[in-house]
Image (spheres, rainbow, N blue to C red):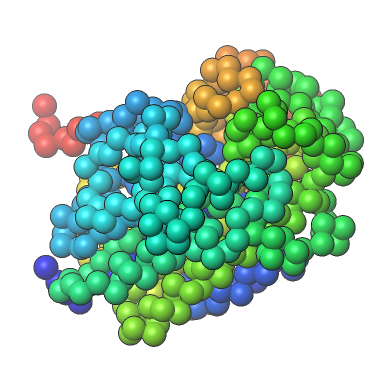
Length: 493
């Protein structure tokens, strides 16, 4: 084992959009610590998730393989396939001390716990979400509340009965707990390097930041969601497509969220029938500000104990959030930028370029091979992602990594109001985005150069026929390329 190998801090938030970092263009949100990470590292402005749903996305970036190959398409899977190898297992086998704090979500947690695969984690502080519906025997965050803070988790969360409201105090928040546990992990005495997966639940709904953070944002001062009145009619075409928001509504109206009760049995997965978009955005930004603060506290601690200079940091999210765009909330089988486009930042002092903002198209499936190569470990033949190390080191142009990116939804969501089986794929080349809803006479074609808000669907425009045919041929090639040829060839016959 090489004790000089870099440590790895892998920070993955849940349901965070691409446009939520101040220094990358959002003047309305405060993210001072993420801003510092961007200024000291490499930020990708065009990073895309392989699924807009948690489990298939996480399975993809943890295996370095597309959903079409690892066959992990759904939330709620009974188990994770035995034949799939997590990059964390490979890193552990190479001598790293590996830990997980927070969410894993490679299999269903419906029974109050999650069946583990051979994940390589020596430390496993599991907290699928912060709410008191999980088995307390397995829920590490609730054990911390109960045993160390003297707080009853059920009572603490009893007031969270709306999809958008003030939540628990910052000192008791799950985002704070993740940092507390991370500091304990990195402080442990060890002879070799460590790798820590830190997976908080925020800013996943319900939108419930601590009141002190919510008070920092005035909803009226924020820009509203991307919305035009035409969205109300346009979204009716998708009523038979699986998603958590079935009907588009005007997000600029008054919040007439119903009283707590039957309609709020599950505020994490069932959005309301009406909402005020600016109020939702204010709460969402407040959640991210708390995450930013806790992330910064951990990074500052690494610096204080002398470990920061030899630690690779990767920060990203598993997928985005519709956040009122086009009159929709939460997630499902839609491919708008707010849902499929995520933040992605790499940092390694003196090894990766500092202050580089790349416009290259990249995918989360690229993270696993990148970490392996950066740690001087072999990248297995079966990984489909493409390492970013040469770009991160400044050895190749920062403007190009891939011709296009692919996102796939294949019966991925079981918690939608209309949980109809749906299969759809997206291909995006940096300008044109094609979406095919397989089995439906339904498609989308957007030119993001002239229409960054994705308001004008060119799919049915007869003047776009030739371009559409060309793009669909490329779409088919790109989607088929996500399916692996399988077992390594060792002979000619």
